[in-house]
Image (tube, rainbow, N blue to C red; front, side, top):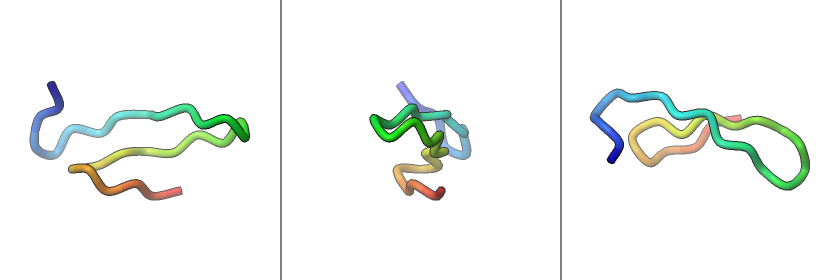
Length: 27
């Protein structure tokens, strides 16, 4: 249920946090 322009913090196995924006992941 993500909204357009919504920024979601995603936790990855290597311990680095990435932000998923509009389905695009940036470090």
